[in-house]
Amino acid sequence: MQKQEGFLAGVRGNRLYHQRWLPEGGTKAGLVVAHGLAEHSGRYGNLIDRFVPKGYAVYGIDHVGHGKSTGQRLYVERFGDYADSLSGFLDSVRELQPGKPLFLVGHSMGGLIAALTLLDQQGGLSGAVLSGPAIKAPGDLPPAVLRIGRLLSRLCPRLGLVPVSAEGVSRDPRVVEAYINDPLVSRGRITARLGMEILAAMAQVRREAARITLPLLIVQGGADRLVDPAGARLFYDAVASADKRLILYEGLYHEVFNEPERHRVLTDVEQWLEAHLNREQGG
Image 1: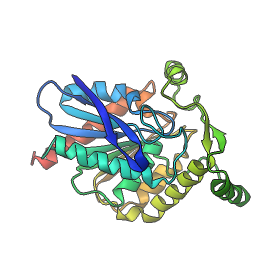
Image 2: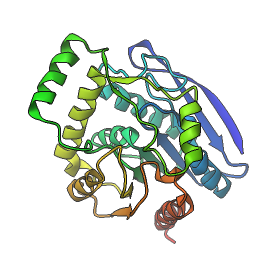
Image 3: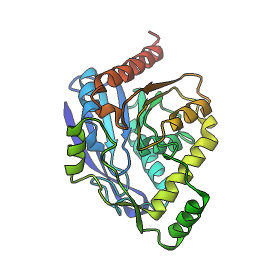
C-alpha cells in the first residue's frame, strides 16, 4: 500500500488537506471518502485496510475547518462550501484515475455533503455509499429554538452552541478513547452558523432527493444517537434511484465502520461494490 498526501486550493482561500492510499498492483476502482462532522479523513483505517489490498484506491479530503485543512473549527460560511470542495476533489480524482469506476463514500455530515453534491454532480460516478447520513437531526426542534438559531446565525455566527459528543460514535470503548485523544478531532462547540447551515442542507436534500438517480447503498446503525436513523429511510424513499438498498443494523451506533460488527458491515459494502463493478464490466 502506498500513501500520498498534499494540499489543494479551496474555497475562500483555504488550503484543503487530502490523502490517498493506493494498492500495490493495478487500481480497479476508486473510493472517495467524505468524513463526518468534527473528524477527519484519517479516521477510516478499517475501510482502507479492507479495500486497498483488494485493488481499490481510497481518496480522502479534510473539509474546510477540519483535520489538517485551514479554516475555523466547527464553522462554515455556507454549507455549500463543503459540497463545492468535494466536487472539486472528485474532479481531481477523476484525472488521477481516468476511465476507472469511482464511488463516493459519505459518512454522517459527510453523507449530507455527498448527498448535496449528488444533486448536481452524478456524472462519472458509478455509485455512492452513505453511512449514517445526517439527513434528519435527532429529535424535533421547537419552532422557537429554530427562530433563535437563525437569529444567532446572523448576529453571532461564530458563537459556539452545541458540544460535540464522543460517546455515541461507537460501542467499542477503544474507538471512543481514540476519538477523544485524537488531536485532529475538534472537541469544541458547533457554531450557530454551522448548526443552521446543517439544518438547511438537510431540508434541501430531503426536498430535492428525487434528483438523485445513481446506484445507492445506505448503511445505518439502528441505535444511532448522533443522527436520527429515520433519516436514512426518508432519504432512501425519496431518491429516484432504481438501484438502491438500505441496510439497517439493529443495535449498532453511529460509526458502523468502527463498531464491533464492522466486519459484517464492510462485507456488505464490499459485496455491493463488487456486484456493481461486475455489472459495469458485463460480468
